[in-house]
Image 1 (cartoon, rainbow, N blue to C red):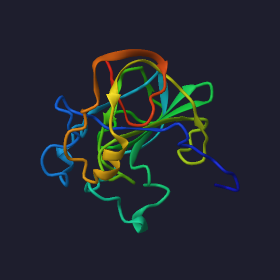
Image 2 (cartoon, rainbow, N blue to C red):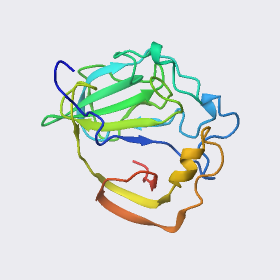
Image 3 (cartoon, one colour):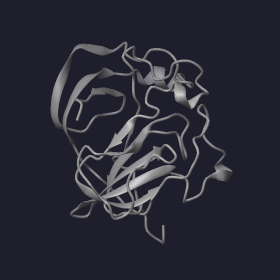
Image 4 (cartoon, helix red, strand yellow):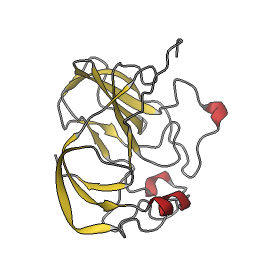
Length: 200
């Protein structure tokens, strides 16, 4: 962008929610409301100030990515919010539900505060929360920053092979869970990890 190379999503994580039965979707996978994570609260990871929001896009129909001809620099991330966490660090949350963002640019938010709810907007084929930290408020013209999560439980892994084959995300995804989740502190989850979080 503007003659510079950026890698904004270098440390991004796409979070999908499994329900208690290990399902990502229950019922017709073409119905966005049948996904376990759809409509879930999206929380502030730290105290910060809202820099920018987009909140007027409709959900995509799950199962396929949107027509590339409809994607622009403005809508590629879907409905989203950017927080200034201070010290040159910005948090980015993408693919939120229309009209769910509860704050406006300039508002202060507290860690654990509900920012909005999970949708399926922008360049996405199923409801998931895209999250990363970056070194500027530009969602594309920035570089991703490494980070760790204060506390989590490592509960197992989803099979990468099964995930690659599961185009519509149906079926159970918790076959490889541990009998006892392993508490972790100050770590960054790897691909296909199943993570438990305590309620805020």
